[in-house]
Image (cartoon, rainbow, N blue to C red; front, side, top):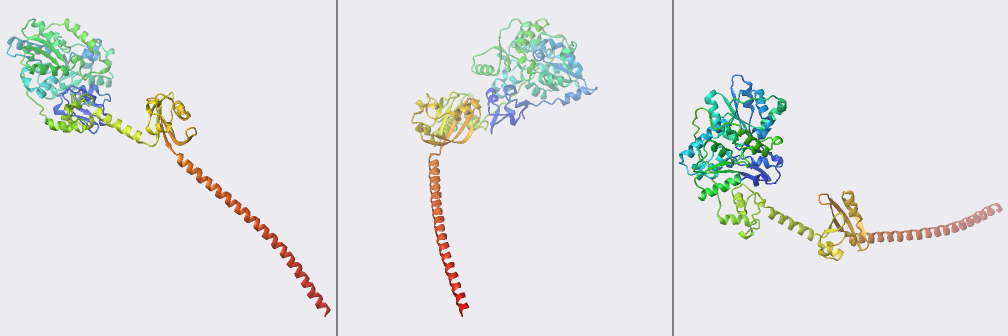
Length: 565
């Protein structure tokens, strides 16, 4: 299980954590990342570089809160001297008062443990039985060696880290039941403490700042506090060359070459040079964080001023005595191998994987690093190991996307045109080129107004809103279109897609004309029928009148004949 957790919703395909991870202990699947716990060296860089703040660390403070509330439990703080960088020198002594207000019984600087570590290093240098010595103050470096350079384990100084050395001293002096809590800027200290018998808990500087805020403790309103120990020059440990400076205070001369290396990339180069036999008989101060512990990953960023802190820590240390007071204690230890054994495919398999993304042979390998891996070969190995996805290759996916886009645009029967805010043509597809009787090269030097009425495009750009499915007729080129113009705010472009409906419009006009002609013909027929009807009615009226006259005459004749008889 990893100390680092990832908020799935916030992880957004940026690969920044993967690029920053020297040991590539990150698995990328389905657009999300996960830290591979047994391969991680807990440098904390993935937390620092994540732009979405999607990564955080697991460190439960509830046990510590419980200890502070229980009067029967004695608590002791081992405070990393890099607190100058976290809270500022002006608040340094006030922080001590704040810790007492929170309920801690004993407050000491981890520099006490560092002084004993320095004494142990000096003993190694004077004995001279190690041809090259790597310091073991940084648990991330220790993990880097044990996991990825196990052949260099004999070079690790067999000495506890200052945190563990201090924890042992506290328990020996105050009792083994005393709860030792380390406070510092380091993620890997959380894991180191979990494996240690001398340290019971860790609070990061970041967590301490949040805790103070929750308790409404303002440092600038507190009086100055004090340590429960005599400060020592070993408080210079958090800055580069700090360990070497502390050694030189008590051992000005040695036949070992003295070297200080910080930053994991630099350490990787160092280890490769040692393997190659380029460096021998050297005492090397090693630190995973570039710039030393004052640049630890769990610093409260709002107060973090590492350059200023480096000067302040050096100036402060110069006023303090070097060496240790009293007897030394046994802080020897042994570091074991925890080698990460990776399944590496053969060259044939690597090329098969790369061939799927357009890299059939080495000359096609770009090695651009955009996927997070230094070379295409490294990325293929990660794909084989299930740590990466095949299509994480940015150039390949961009090429595919561009090709698809070009095919779609070029093959589209619609007229597609993109213009800028000056209505200058920025892109034009083949259909539009044919319509305008021009080539793409010629069109890109001209303005839309030279071909069609640009009013709709102009309105879209000026009003920053799109129009959809508007019927427009461009009489000058004899075309009717269904026009959609989309505004692209990031580039201040208007992209028009014109569907040619000229034939449809002509067919519509023809059908309309036929309907109108049919209506006119029907009207003529109706008018003629009305005329005929009127003529028939007139004739019927005349014959009816004549019939009536005849009948009347007949009736009169019959009546007259009846009277005569």
